[in-house]
Every structure is written in structure tokens, then in C-alpha cells.
Length: 559
Image 1 (tube, rainbow, N blue to C red):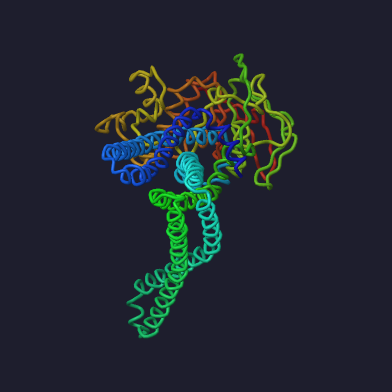
Image 2: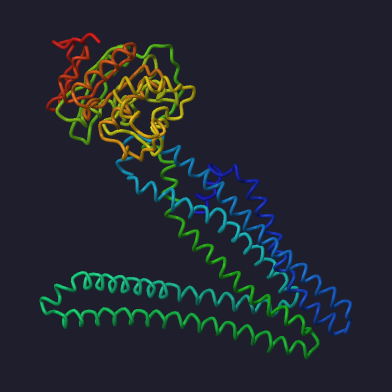
């Protein structure tokens, strides 16, 4: 487990080595101060008070005050520093995860729903931050303090130090014995509380029916049973916890007896000083707290294991990853499907599929099942993997793609891709140097300009995610307008492009698209044959078979 954490750190967090080293230095100084300043209680009693030296007393007191001030200051610096470090690592990890998700194919999004991804980003990442920042530095501090305490205790008196360590080991063993019963009791209390609350909610929701059916006595008895069970569980939990508190008392008593009894005996023999006993009392109390802290650190590491596994699965699992490579473009965007074999949900299997889509060609994809039609395009979009064969765009085999690949093709989906922001932001999508004239021309070409002009803020009107402040027709037109504004895409894929638009406007919009983008390859996915008049070839999927028709009575209409 520790090895996996180390490898994860090497792979994803080496940029923060210097920041962690600085943090460790702050923690080290803070830990040393917390170890050293109790030692001055011995010096005050055994040196200053015993010798009745006021100057030494003031020196020792002043030193303690300085250490306390430094400790408070370092704790403040530590909290601010680690908070800032956590934010930086959080941003870095989330960016890595998002980048990784953007490189995943559609299969990933079938297995991982939106809620799963949000859970990873908003719950698992913070838990990892706790592990790699808070727990890591806290564990380092506890180890430094533990080593320091053992050294000082043995310097002060090795016999008492040895007995104190034995008592501490016994305490840890007994605490481990109580650990499982405490967890079981806590689990029982939680279950009984949930059952009691669920019964209460159900009873109150149906209280009128209970009255009308004269079942008050029955439900009152059930209520009493549930609350008694809940109270019994609480009592059992209290009994188990009380044993734990008894253990604390026994160990504290044993340490005190050891120090006062054996320590007092050594004082009488003049082999130990009173100030030493006082200092060792402070140190032994700190020793138990440090050991418990290390146990809690280990529990935090185990607790973070689930979150760690989920994050690693996203970052390291290549099952869903779109392979990357180096692509070269020479203005040839002809698409070749060569002996491709693929399946859709194991029910739609195609073998030895061959198709050439020439640059600038207008191809219609029609059939009885939208998902089967779209699965063909998902191969081209790298959202699905194929089992055999090859797909080329120009001279590039798309098994391995780079970021330039998606600069060459544009998908306009039937479900509008609209994010929260203004109409203008949704149109240009971060592109620069797009003039207002160009924006309004695009709106005119998709018959949306009049609608936008009628809005108070025009193109600056804020629309919600999915276009919640637009009609379905307006949302689809807005997406189609991107064709005229974004990159001059050599390949355009239209999924049911006029499904939300009336027929008259659809004809105008499609004519504008096919006329303005006559040099681009346009692939239209549709179930409506009237759309095919704009295409000069058709691929038909029917009853699990794929048929390619050249012309076949379909001629591209004059646009």
C-alpha cells in the first residue's frame, strides 16, 4: 500500500517536492520546539528554584515564553502554508483528472455517470489532499516527536523510560482489542437511529390514515419498540466506550504510580531530581498522545484507500483511453474504413466494413436505429474502439491521434451542446478575432438573428446549461450557427440537423450550410429521407446490415 502511494507521488506530485520539503522543515522546527520547551520545567525546579537563583529563573521563564510564542507563530504559518499547498495540489490533481477524462472514449461515460465523476472530483480529491498534506505532515511530526521523546526520556532516566514504553505498548494492545467492539457499537447505533427515523417519517407521513383505520395503538406500540431498541443500542455503545475510558484511567494511574512511586524512591536515594519527575510526567503524557496520533494517521491512510483507488483508476487505467500519437496533415481529408470490425452492445456486429468518403463529399447515413448509425461515426470520432481493421483520415491512421485531430472535424449533435453563459460565448466558444458582423451573419444563416435581436441584451443574453432559456428550435439553431464561426472544419458531422426546426426554415438553413461548406466533407445522420437530397451518397443501416448506395436516385440538389 505504501509503495503505491510512493509511486503515485512520483508520477503525479513531483512538482510539489520543494513545497513539501519546505512544509516538512516548518513541521520539524515546530515539533522540536514542542519537545524542548517542557525540559525547561526541570531546569526551573532543579536549577533555578533549588539554588534560589532569580536570574536563572527569569532566563528559563523567558526562554519558555519565547518557545511558546514561536510555537504559536509556527502553527499559524503551518496552517496557512498547508492550506495554500492543498489548494494548489487540489487544482493540479483535478486538472489531471479532467485532462484524463477528456482523453476517454464513450465507453467510459457508460460506466461512469456524472454523479460518479463529481464524487471523485469533490470528495475523493479532498480526501487525497488530507492524505498527502495533512496526514503526511502530521505523521512526520508524530515520528519526529516520538523519537525526540524517547531520546529525552532515556536521557532523563532510562529505567522509568523503559517502563513507560512497556506501559504504552500494553495500552496500544488493549486499545486495539477495544477498537472492533467500539466500531460495532457505533454501527449498531447508526442502524437503529436510521430505522427509528425512517419509522418516524413513515408514521408522520401516514398519520391521517392511521387515525382513519383506528391503528393508533398499534403504531404507538411500534414507536415504543423502535425507540427502546435505539436506546438499548446507545446504552451498549456507552458501556463499550466506558471500558475504553476505564483503560485510559488505568494507564494514567499506572504512569503516575510509576513516576511518583519509583521516581520518589530514586529522589530519596538522590539518584533523581524532583524537576526530572515533573518533566517526565509531561513527556510521558505526550508520549501516549503521539502514539495514538500515529495510529490515527494509519487509520486515515486506510480510510483514503478507496478514494485513492478511484483516482488511480481514472488516471492510470488505459481501458478507456483514446491512444495518442503524432499526426501529419497535408490537406487530404479523405476518410477510409478498411476491413473494420466492430460491435454495438454485442448485438450489432459488423465485419470487413469498407467505405471511402472522399474529401468534399456529402454523405447521408440513414437507418432504423439512431444508435447504430451513430456508432459508425463514433468510430471516426474515437468514441468507440474497433476490434479489427483500420480507419484513415488522409494519411493518418486514427488508432493514435493528437490534439490536432478534433481541430479537423465538427460534430453538431441532436442534443444541443449549450453551457451556462451568454449567447455570444456559446457561439464563439473561446475563439478570438470573431467580429460582431461575422456573428450576426452566422445568426442570419441559421434564421436566428430576429430572435436574438428581440432579446433585451441581444447576443449578451445569458442562457443556462442546455439552453434552458431558449426554445428547442433556438437551441438547435444556435449550435448550427457554430459551423459558420469556428474553425474551417474539413469534416462536419450533422446528427438530425433539422429535427427541431420547421421544414421551411430547415431547407433554408441546410442550403446555407451545404452552400457555404461545399469544400468540407459533410456526413448527415438522419432518419428522414428528404434530408438526403443534399447528399450524393447514402449509407443505409437496416436489419443489422450496412448498404452503401452511390447516387441510387439521390442526387445532390443545387444549393
